[in-house]
Amino acid sequence: MQQAVAGGPGEVHHDVRLRAAPGRRPPARHARPWKLAAAPGGQRPPRAPRPAAPQIVIAGAHGGAGASTLAALLRLHLAAPGGHGPRVGEMPPAPDADPARIAAAGWLPVPPPGTRVIIAARGTAEGARRAVIAVTALERHGIYPVAVAVVADGAGPEPRQAAQRFALIEGRAGPLIRVPFAAALRAGASPAAARLPRRLAGAVHDLAALAAAGPRREA
Image (cartoon, rainbow, N blue to C red; front, side, top):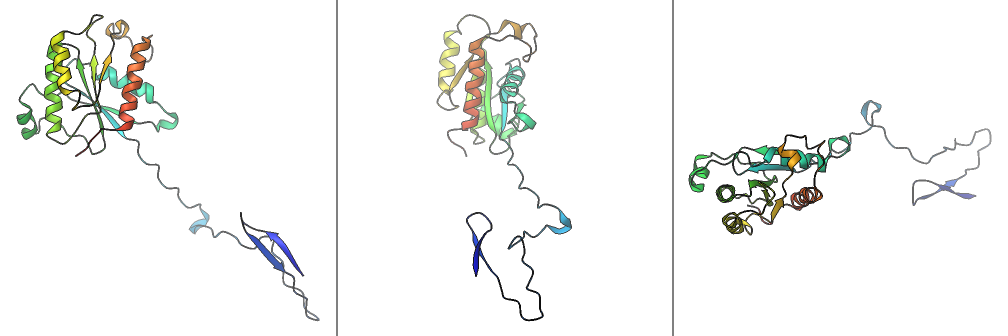
């Protein structure tokens, strides 16, 4: 007589009942037809390590570009339970020098492969000039930023000369993301506690999305 016995998912095992020979007991019938082998020491096999989240680096084109504040805003936006969100760091600004000389002398630290770089610069003529230098110096290392964050220096529009210089690097360093002026941040309020304009939150969201997508081209 055969009886179907449920086993693992998608499996059917047949329990064959043997007739006992005279004077002998029938073989013991197991509740489960198979059992998983335990790992040495009775411990569960280790889980595969979780892949590291991509690191995002804010590179200030010059001192006072707002890189630290922008990094703090991105950390708040990308925070995930258990600390599994992307890591956000900062790079020192590129020196005010010829980009070829900066690259040859190694004055600009090169982030590890796969790092998403965002250039931060003030929306002034000088800030735009320094952004051009930073983008060109990174290009000589085969690094292409995912975006340029143009941090507003005030409530008004940026000067025409600044807009013209920023336009020179827009196609080489990803989109230009205008980060609007926030009086609370200028006054020294913590990004976590300050009441920020909706447009500022939208700019941070756009930068996070561009960092997640990665650069258009890599060396």
